[in-house]
Image 1: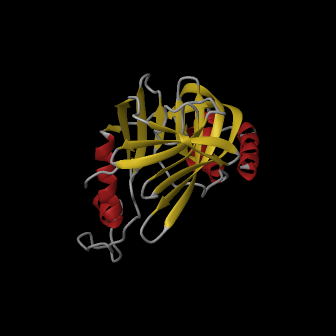
Image 2 (image 1 turned 90 degrees about the vertical axis):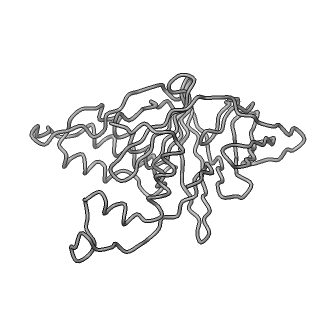
Image 3 (image 1 turned 60 degrees about the horizontal axis):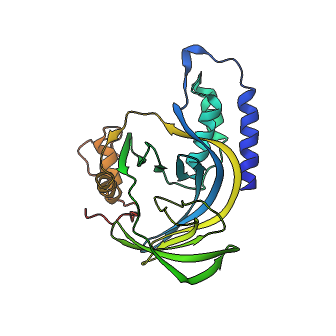
Length: 281
């Protein structure tokens, strides 16, 4: 984390020394609403396994008194830049310069999970091509089964096992009572301690706590014109997109196949995608 934090500090210094902006090209970088202030930040690795490869993402969990935010680390840095810019209009060329200074490559995850926003709910935002999506669900208690006799040490923390059936997958979660926060990665929560590791029975998805630190940081929500769909519908749309992204992109009218013929069939490629929720296409 230290190289990322050092880069972010350099970025903040650059932002505060920004020159006067040319108003004819000025626009806000992001429009953010602050929902809460985190007192802790936990960093997780998120490993996704596919038939022919695996991807490892660095994820951030901001823990506030009312709201928790779980997001990819790249998006975390993008939001941090937006918070520094305070929804103000800046020259677009200068904004691009600051954006290009952000640390990149830690995570390609675009979805964000807000637990406790609105009160008693979970909100998940996501992005696909030019569209933004928002799903809102009741924050119901999760039916965990505790296994107090199953204990092990993970990352230096004494942990106990809990299991759960959730959205078509069987989850095992190792939590530590030493960190008295009843939360964890993704939408996993409700145990008597922070979740240190969680994985499904097929080991397609694996979250592992890497570090936790006291950090005062605003928890921000991106204001946008969202399509409001159930999360399962968003996942089905992404499954369709991932099965043939070339065709999906061509259908937007923003690109044509090589040769410039609009009716030509794009070369079919796929994007590896196994959703956290088991959804029938």
